Length: 289
Image (tube, rainbow, N blue to C red; front, side):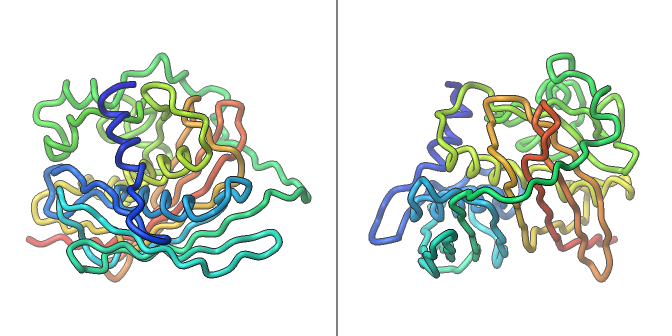
């Protein structure tokens, strides 16, 4: 396992500090004032999963970012067992750092009982997408750009999740037809076969570039001078088994922006063309000067 992937596993492996209480590692400095929102999102997801038996599988989460975090400072997570029914369990997770309430998350778990099935159609060009193995990796692209389009600490950090851009402003093909960012993702080395770990790892990863799609039509990035770009809330629905040991295709696109807020959307497909999960995020967007 690479050092970057081991660090991600360590970030998502929480320390028990009391009944339904956990502590997680603080985040690394990634070149911005606050911390990467996916860090809190992944850890809160891990805390929610740790409070449920393995036969109850996470199927949705909704999170609100209340305050920015501080690099290097541990987080503490308190889980409230809101309900355990015959088929579903509900958990509320509150994240704290230095006595400051920084995130609130609701998570729902299901026993996976059978029901009617509706198969979603993959993107129209799915059959002709370039294979991930044929694409230049994100890290290689960022190291080839001088200067990189994003803050240096972020753009050239070691990755735990291999990311192969199909469409992005910084890739040879440019943004997608919908003005969004699309890529293949997979763990850089095999992760343990643990459904909760894979879901928490995707929750961590899901904040990586979703909201960036809102800036693509403006020709901007969140690292642009005078840009305030802050996550407000984030939701994920897990439809099928999510396996980060196999390539997954991530399609993301801008929704709308108004009154200083923007909404972006994403879907994740297996290599076989099955819809694995859907997610969305709202952000604060302000540009001074």
